[in-house]
Every structure is written in structure tokens, then in C-alpha cells.
Length: 463
Image (tube, rainbow, N blue to C red; front, side, top):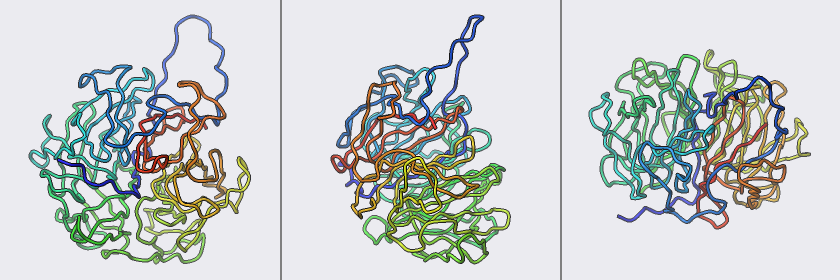
């Protein structure tokens, strides 16, 4: 079967934003304490994978299922999802044409193929019985899904663009749970077919019959109670042959009751935002419909949302009083970035509009944003490799590293060695996580040199 055409404006959905373990540290023997290594603060390190982009489908080195190896490496991809587990490993699932599951151990620096197909053939899903875990269950190949890690350390996966239990290609609304201890998937809710319609029910009221419409490009958070939250995304009317439409609905899923609740936003598509007054919360405020945005959660449990297709607005959502606040950026589409001086925070700084960026929250509570597809200050469109930090207390952006132009080439340096000159190439639809030491990790994504190709490089950045 032929791979469906790759979406040229591939957008990232990164979740597992709030887990603290993507890497671990190990002690050394002996009675003396070794001197600390040289500081690599504010430097990128190329850790694994190739320094070139591949036209999909690319070939990985899978090795033996369940067996780590220094020679294993996932194929290049964009639009994957990721999680981090309690043991400090980084997990990777799917992407365009793929449904393989990988684990990366940052301590051993090894990849392990843990499930799914080793062939980029758009594998269909094996759903089994809803609510029942099985070693044979597996989601179908997909890209631009949404993922979370719950308080028990289980991984969750929702929707995306790909395959259900048949060869039909389209948007999905299936919800899956993966237990990293048993390595088994459970189909929790939603349809095993593409193109499912939404059932909103009554706003604020959970119901077993509620269901999200099939979609890609949504973002998610996990709250302090372990509930999963999802915002926005896009789909096609009539699915694969229809018109692209966008959502601004906000949903909460309770893993305990296995129910969805429509919490905010519209039950219709393409709704415009209500910005209100900059910096002032209001029950009537709401971000407009979008996909490919970035998301974080702060230490107080508030949700944050940035940008997406043609947008650079920053929003804060308080789940206690159910109010949105427009914090920074423009209320109109197409706003370009204001970079200022690299390394210097300013109230006038702001990233330009973009979709498919990667976001993190560091150990100090700052938000980090990398790359995506957008425009530079000259209005030129392409892939970005700029790294930004947002200080929640001061509400200021800082351009930290990377270029203020699009389509910057990667500077890889020596594998495993940090350097101030190193930088990933401009890209969209990468995935990432943060490790226990506060380092940022970045994998893969869609290249713009050449256009339509993908990376399988793994990077670490030490703030």
C-alpha cells in the first residue's frame, strides 16, 4: 500500500510536558568526589541519530524487540508523540506512516524498540476489547496525536491523523493507555474508525456518552489530580476529502471515571477568539480555534497556551475559576517576532507566529519554546530553530539561542560533545521532554532543507 501524501505544514503535538524524568544520573564509586565537569550551560549537544535529513520513509535500525543496543536508532519522522517514565527514560511513538514505540535510556545512551511495526507501511490498529489490556493491542500508525503522562506513570494517546482498524486514512478520536511496566496497550474510548463526530453533552457535566470529534494537532496538559486536558486541533469535514476546520474546545478526561467533560470553548468549528483586556482574566475570554500550538503547565496548576497556525498569542487558563487570560502576543494573525538582544529579557520581545514548535517547563518554572514553522522578522516563511524562554513571574520573553531567520542549517559538532556553536537545524513537528536535571531533549521533526524530509537526530540542551 502506498503512503498517503505527507502534509506539508506538519504540526507538532507534544505532551508529557510535566514529567520530571527523561534522564537519570548514576553515582560513582570511590571515596573521593571527582571534580565537576566543565559547564555546558546554554549549549546544545548532538546525542544520537544522523546529521542529515531523510526523505520518508527512512530506515531505522530496530534490532531485537525489547533489547537495547548502541546501534539501534529510530527512523526519521515528524509528528510523533513522546512521554517520559518514572525511571528516567524517554519514549517515542509513531509519526507520519509509523506506529513503532521506542524507549531511550539517557544514562546508557541506547534506544530500544518496544512495540509496533518495524516497517513504515501505515500499520492498522489492533484494538481488542475496549477497556481490556492485551499484549497484542497496538494503535495504528498516526501523526500529530496528543499525549499525556498520568500521575501513576501511565502513558496516554489520543487521536491524530492515520489509521484505525482498517486501511481507511483519516482523523481519529481513539483514546489509548499504555502501561510501561507491562508494556501493554488498552483501548479506553472513542472509535476504532476514522472520521468520528463529537458528542459534547452539557458543558461542565461529565458523561460516558461524551466524545471529542476526530482531530489532529491538539495540545494537552495533565493537572495535579491526574486528569487529562485537551485543547483545539483540526479536522476535515467529511474527513479525508473535506475542508480543513479548526477547534477551540477545551476538554477534561478523568482516568478514574473514564469520562470526557466539555469545559470551555465552542462546540462549532472555526470560532474566533475573545481576547478581552491584556492581562485581565474574564469568564468571557477564550482563545480562537487553532492547531499546532504549544502548551505548558505552571507550578500553580494553571495551563498556558502559545500560538499555532499564524498566531503568536500567549494565554493562561485557571482551571479553578475556569477563566482565560490573554497574557502577551498579538490578537491578530500573522504577527512577526521581536527578538531584541539575544540573552536579554524584555517586555517588548515576543516570538513570531508559528505552528509545530516544541515546549518545555524547566525546574525553575520557566517556559521554553523551540522552532516550528513560521516566519522570521522579514516575513520569510520556513522552519525555525530559535530557542525562547518565558519568565512567568516577569512575563518577559528572552531569545536564548538559534537564528532569527528561517531555514537555518544545523551545526552538529562532535556527537556527545556540547559546544556553544552547536544548534539543531530549523524544523517543525519535533518532540521533546525534560530530564530530572532540567535538561531539554529534542528529537526529529520535519526539515525544510530539503523540504518534506525528516530528521532522526537527538539533542540535549542544558539551560
